[in-house]
Image (cartoon, rainbow, N blue to C red):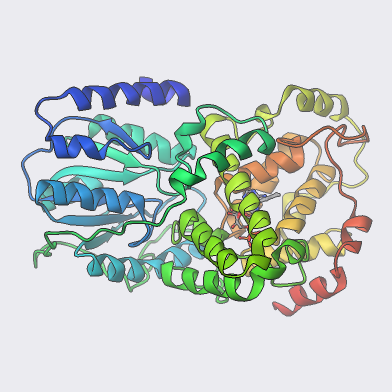
Length: 491
Ligand SMILES: Cc1cc2nc3c(=O)[nH]c(=O)nc-3n(C[C@H](O)[C@H](O)[C@H](O)COP(=O)(O)OP(=O)(O)OC[C@H]3O[C@@H](n4cnc5c(N)ncnc54)[C@H](O)[C@@H]3O)c2cc1C
């Protein structure tokens, strides 16, 4: 591991701040380019002046969209400042951690939208899939003068970015495009939503503003012999040792355009009752934006602006907007903060001291029943509601928020210890949820099983002082029979 990879997030932020300062003082860098880094979303990971070449490359990883994308906007601004065209590049990696056919199908559906939206802006879009996906040959092929990337706080993606900053031969900046408030501005791990919320909300005036969506002044023209794979074909089709054990879900369609359609339906039809319906798993009442956010098909800013516009038009939606912002901004960005600053986000080591103590005190408590991972996966427990929630995830690729909490807490009750409980929950969540493998999942599991961001409750067996949810009371808070029937009808 390199020194940068061993650093804490704060140390790395400080290191990149130094790179940024050196870049700003570099007499070889055009002033117009320097001005573009005067933006808290931008991190200069590799400085210096653009090299000789033909275009600016946007290396699209997390923000998989051709509109409302700060990283793409920045690449276009760089291209315009240098009088060069821009091409967005997406690498179809075969073995993205814990991703399977379900996730790839959703991702794949988003690619034609990116191509279409980039074209409208005079930007090229090239996808190369395994075994041709490597970035460096692409940069050579198109003559990249510099690379703009996006950000992802998760461990592996950040490691790649650190590695690329060390090995690329051209300047490399990243742009924090999938949060409303640039995540480094929170500076350290936040203790709770109550602490993070006012800091985030104070910053909204500056950051919750419409996107510019600038156009490229010099249009990119694809060379006829440049290798590019078909964005409308299934990229996984000839991958041999690829995980196809979890099938795609027909009911979902990925992509920026499908995401916008659902967003508008939510704002027009569901937002008004959101505050009430969000706790009713039997009702289609939440936004279902999480898969679109996970794949970057929509940015949170687009969603928040749409909700804000709806609330401006209909003042009676004000309370619903506030409730929605609490989830989309306070809780979601707290999750990003958690993963960014807590390297052990997927293990009991991330618990606060009070939780570590109470977990240790109850580690040996007798469990009434223990289930294997296979039994949990198949929904073979004594609890009908839990089995239905599990099957919603397995068949539909998404589980209602209210039940996710209950689902995770029951796993804690039914496994020998919290480490096993977290391991099983994360494995299932990442395998089946379309929005899995996301900061929201790690924070959600830690909240449910380690009391992360929660307060202490009365001491009780197994859970200690961590909040408990009983099946009897959970099932009474909504029409659980209707919910169970709906899941059974999913086939
Ligand atoms: C055990 C557990 C596992 C979870 N796993 C995931 C996961 O893998 N991926 C994921 O994105 N979310 C996860 N969540 C958070 C939350 O359940 C989902 O984001 C939400 O249910 C998605 O549905 P929605 O888009 O209709 O949400 P809405 O209620 O419409 O909320 C809008 C958006 O706000 C954000 N949001 C809502 N609730 C939360 C929350 N509690 N924490 C963080 N952000 C939130 C999401 O981005 C969501 O899309 C998990 C929560 C728990 C308790």
